[in-house]
Length: 173
Image (cartoon, rainbow, N blue to C red; front, side, top):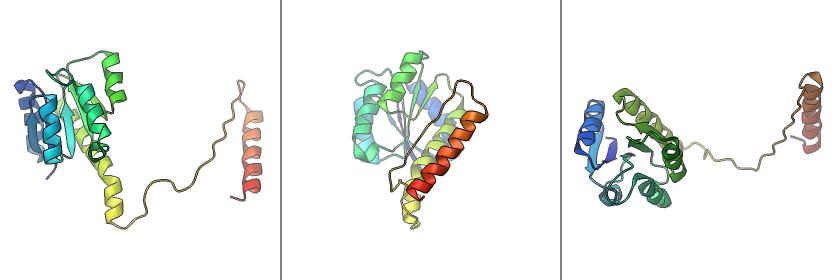
């Protein structure tokens, strides 16, 4: 069963998240503040975390940073669910390591969709290793060459194609 840790100091929002996720088979655990959330994350190893920003002890940004520093939680999906609608808060959320940002009041279907997508994405490397597939990380350094022209047109395209052919013959790849 998929375990989701919900960290919010307001019981009403805990109940709203529970109502949104209950019928989808998620196993929900709740924490009332950031410190309790950290402890519960370490004790329960959730598949996903939903956190508020404004809490009494540790705010959601710092909580996310602390979780991301721990190897165990580096790839666990974290959704920030907050009443803060300021762009700076949204950017700060992503800078701290959150995977998604939703504002309260939220649309339950959107929360479920984002949670499902993030959990599936986090499971892909694990599934590949279980099924014996090759590791999905690149094995060699790549090369990148960019061409830009203010005018565009045939000249820039011809130069790009000729450069690609020349580099291919030079590097024998």
